[in-house]
Amino acid sequence: MKNKRNFILYLAGRFISYIGTGVQQIALPLFILDLTHSGALMGVFSALNLLPNLITSPFAGILGDRKDRRKIMIASDFGRGILICVLGFLAFGGKINIYILFGCQIFISIMDSIFNSASSAIIGELLDENELMKAMSARGGLDAFSMVIGPALGGIIYGFFGIKVVFLINGLSFIISGIMSALIIYVCKNHKQEKMTISLFFNENGEVLTFIKGDKGLMQLFIFAMISNLLVAPFVDIIMPYVIKKAIGFTSQQYGYIMATFTVGMLIGNIALGIFSKKLKTKLVMNLGLIVEAVMFLTLAIAVFPSEVKLLGGHSWILFAFLAFICLIIGIFNACVNTPIGANLQKMVPNDMRSRFFSLLGIFSQGAVPLGSMVYGILLDKFQYYYILIVVVILNAVVTGRFIIRAVDEVYEPKVDEGTVFQGIKEN
Image 1 (cartoon, rainbow, N blue to C red):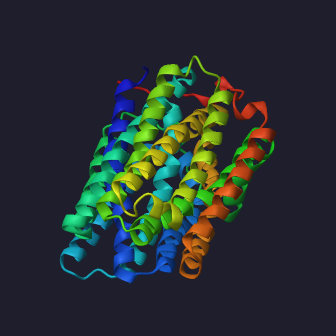
Image 2: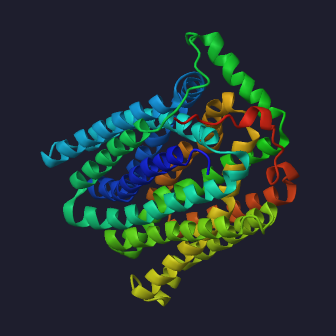
């Protein structure tokens, strides 16, 4: 594979940081729940994790298309690593509280936005167009493997050692990721010296919006991603830890294991895509993934009804195994949706606007999530969780069905302008 060394360094840094992120992602909602006993505050934290990211994204996209993407990744990784390590030291001294946690999360979210705009765009420079599906499958599989390890460790580490060790592990993982990025040999092709002005901000992002508007396939993907994330993302981040730990009574470790099966499924799905990608049509793979996901979400909602929980023995190993199996299947078919879409988007967008594009994509797809998180947190304090689940999964099934019926061919098989998309990274 062209530029193999650079791509391996990219994957290595990503793998290590994802392990740390997975540890904290599982432990932090449990810590907030233990600290505050409030579903609403879980919703507030989730919103703080996303809102600064969304506000910063349009600026981060312009930065990623005008400055050295590798240096942006390095600075963001070291910044996040140091700040999270500070949280760990505060936790060791017993000085951490919900307000410090919320305040630090705002700065971490801003750095997430800056990092993601550069990291998402740089992969198109590492690869040739015909390598993308296999490479994206490899990246997705490695992401999934790291997120199998991370969540499994997250529940265990939090249960035995507390949040202080969780913070230190995640902070160090970001610092190591920054070192990996520093070793990449990279020639910046988009460096521009113009100062950021209001006029430049609107012109640069307006150029991308015009590009998106002229592509029906991109418009359909944007709308679907926005509505789907509004429904499903808070489902995973807010409702699942509440249901599994508080409503059913599983331990933190068991919650970590159940959520880890989702990423095991993603690993299996990406391995299968890497092997069979040239033998299967993208449209068949994506539509099958969407349908199976919708069915499994409905099955999950039914399985955690009080009557079904009682039938399966409460917080028993039978119910544990059943929920883990459902999450495994969702993960397998989630890979069948996300990996082809990721590869197609890299093909469809020119390199010189790729950072802005993925930043705006994040706004479209994630913009509704903070509102959804706040609403879900409030609803959990007022209504029974199983009513909320049933309404959400039915709405998700309707949205999925409508997307499948109306999606144009370009969603599955995009046209590629090879003269502007792939520019490559030079090696010594």
